[in-house]
Each structure stands twice: as C-alpha cells, then as structure tokens.
Length: 633
Image 1 (tube, rainbow, N blue to C red):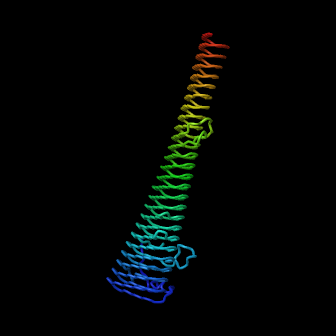
Image 2 (cartoon, rainbow, N blue to C red):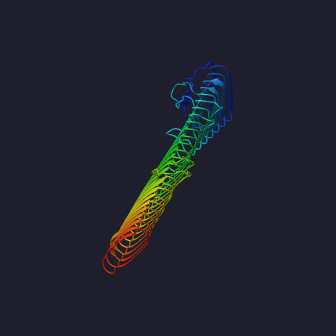
Image 3 (cartoon, helix red, strand yellow):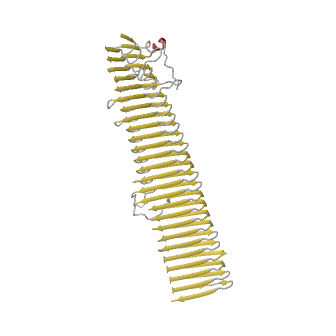
C-alpha cells in the first residue's frame, strides 16, 4: 500500500493540550541516536516527548495518580528505529499517548492500577482518547496493564494508509483484574495482533483489514463473562481465541480467502460465533462445559468446520454454502443437539454423540455427492432407553447416509417411536441405519439406485419406502414387538426382512424383477406380501405361534411363492394370477388353514399340512397346472 508519513508540527501537538497537569516535562529530540529520560512522581504530572530522527530512545517513568504522558515520534519525512518505554505505576487514571510515524519502531506502555487510559469509566468503551498509534511498517507495540477497569488501545495504520508487518500486543494480567478492555485496530498486511486477559468481565476487540493478518486473543484463569470479538477482512487470515471461564462469548468474522479460525472455550455457557465468507476457510471450535453454544456459518468454497463439545445441553449449528464443504461435530454428554445444513456439491457431514441420552442430530444436505454419518451412543435410562434422535435429509445425487445408534439399556419393553429418519431424493442414494434399543427408523428414498439397510435390536419399528430403479431394502430386527413396512415402486427391487418375536412385516413391490423374503421367528408374526410385476419371487418362513401369511402376485409372469409356517394357529392365503407361477405351501403345526388360487399358464402347486385341524381350499385356472396336496394327522 502507498503510505504517507509526513506529520506537520500542528499534527504533533494534538493530544497534549487536553491533559491536565501540575508539573510539566517537555523533551524534544532532533537527530539520531539520542536518549531521553523522564522520571516524575506525584499528582497530575505531564510529560511530552517529541522525537525527530532515527534510533532514538525515550524512557518515561511516572508514579502516583493522574499521570499523563505524550510521546510523538515523527519528522519531516519519517522516523525509524526508535524505542519508547512508558511506565506508570501504582496509581489510577493514568493516561499514555504514543504516536509513531515511521518504520522499525518499538513502543512499550506499562500501567499499574485502576482506570488507566480510561478517563471516563462510565462512557462508551473502545473509543478511548489515549492510545498507541502507529503509522509505518515493521513496528512493535506492547501495552501491559495490571489492575481493574483499564483500557488498552493500539491502532496500526489508517483506512487511507495501511501499515505492514507490525506486531501489537495488549496484556491485562494480575489475577483478579476485572472489567478490562482491549482494542486493537490494524490496517495493512502481514500484521499480528494479540490480547491476553486475566480476570472477570474482560472484553477484547480486534479488527484487521488487509492480507495475511493473524489475530490471537486469550482470556484465562476462570475469566467470567469474558467477551472477544475479532474481525478480519483480507486473504490468508488466522484468528485464535482461548477463553477459560463461565459465560464466555466469542465472535469471529472473517471476509476473505484462506481464513482459519480456532476457538477454545472452557467453562459453562460458553458461546462461539464464527462467520466466514470466502473460500479455503477452516473453523475449529472446542468447548468444554455445560450449555455450550457454537454457531459456524461458512459461505463459499472449500470450507471445513469442526466442533467438539463436552458437557450437557450443548448446541452446535453449522451452515455451509458452497462446494466441497466438510462438517464434523463431536458431542459428549446428555441432551446435546447438532444441526448441519449444507447447500452445494461434494459435502460431507459427520456427527458423533456419545455417553449421553436424548441427543439430537439434524443433517440437511442439498446438492451432489453428499455424505452423512451419525453415531449416537446412549446410556441406561430404565425402560425408556436412550431416546437419541437422528434426522437426515438429502436432496441430490450420489448421497450416502449412515446412522448408528446404540443404547446400553437392557430393560426395553416397548418401542417408543424414537430413532433415525433418513430422506433421500435423488440418484445413487445409500442409507444404512444400525440401532440398539427402543429405536424407530424411517427411510424414504426417491430416485434411482437406492439401497437401504436397517438393523435394529430391541422394540424396533422400521418403515422403508423407495420409489425408483434398482432399489434394495434389507431390514433385520432382533427384539420385541418389531414392525417392518417396505414399499418399493419401480424396477429390480429386492426386499428382505428378518424379525424375531411378535414381528409384523408388510412388503409391497410394484414393478419388474422384484424379490421379497420374510423370515419371522417367534410368536404372533404376520406377513403380507403383494407383488404386481414380472419375475417376482416371494418367500415367507414363519416359526412360532399365531402366524398369518397373505401373499398375492398378480398380472405378471414367472412368479414363484413359497410359504412355510411352523407353529399354532397358522393361516395362509396365496393368490397368483399370471404365467409360469409356482407355489409351495407347507404348514406344520395346529389349526392350519390355507386358501389357494392360481389363474394363468404353467402353474404348479404343492401343499403339505401335518398336524391337527387342517383346512385347504384349492383353485387353479389355466393351462399346464399341477397340484399336489398332502394332509396328515
């Protein structure tokens, strides 16, 4: 950037006329290699030092209350390589002004006490009348304040003229130093701004405009209600925040390319807000404590967001709009919530919620080649189970969703309708759900080449609906009161359901090349299969008490049906209407009843009933039919 370093005599006088004084010290240095020392003690002291030249050294020491110091380094051109040290100790309402126009200068201000650089404690903060102002390159500025209600302000560059490669640091230490304010404003490139605070109710403001700037802010030692705000505008910016205490608050706004934001917060009710606009952005938030809140919004390309939260009632919100976004959320605790919204292409979302109950995960992906993975692990809450909830909505092509829910509770007696909800609309979708304990899974896929796999253990209910081509649904349920409903409308569908103990399965496939297999082991099982298509194959095996099977294949050719029931009170009704149908029904047990009808060509029927109270009603209409019936008692 083009910079103007010329300050006139009138400009160098600013700030000195507004300071109250008792004893005055005026030092002027014109030249190079000079040394100025000012030592004042008492009340209402004022020191004014003006330097014209290079490699000068100025030391000002003031002790007591209402000490004022003004140091101005400039010349008709520029002043380089100067050193300024200001020490104001053991007092209140001390103020220091340091103005540097030049390159390679160093300014250090040390203040001890309260209300330093804060003439008006009740006024609006972050617009103090006294500060360190640097206009030039390769300068270093330090402000160290020990006490309460101090204000530190460093300004580098102006909106018209930037300053490059400068370092600014404000340290507000002393454990128990409360109510301090730190502000750093930087305009230029390759600058580094740092704030370190130790106390309660401390605030930090860092604003940088330019390229390759780095901002770092730390609030530690149980800093309560600390606040950090960092704004960066430019390319390749880096922002780091560390807060240790309750009710900490952090805001990072970065507008530019290649920005990196890193936030570490320890304590209850921590709040982090990161907003990045640009591409190649990276945001990382680590929060430890209850009721933590993290909000990350990234708008543009190649963004990455990582959130780690440890505690109860944590909340994470990630919004990504662009191409090749990645979002990762790791939560440990109870009643945590994660929301991820991705709009764009090649998005990836991963949510892990462990060692908790009643966790919620919501992932919305809009675009192409999205992947969503959710892992939830709950703990024992009695017969109610873990109660974790996962909802994934994917709209686009080549989406993949995987949900794993595990609850260590062994006392599950009823299904609660909780669990995983996956909705995919698009092409080449894949959904995989694994649940253990009181879970309910619903998968709705609209599109082509969809695959759904659901495995549930304990009081589960599963509904899979696929509309499109090349769909495959597999549901395996092991537990009590299982319910599975699979409806596939399209071509080349395959459905397989395995249930144990009181399972109910309903499979309806409409299309060509369908195949359905249902195996139920246990009591009170019911299976209904309806296939209206060509080349369909249905097989139902039920072992237990009170099994009922109803299988219908109509208006198609090459259908084959096999029903096997073993137990008490079995009932089978089979209807096939089409060509090349083959039906085999075998019932072994008590109180069997079978009703059979085939209408078409090349039908073949075999029925074997062994046990008590068998009843069979038979009908075959068509050509090339063969029938074999065996009843034994």
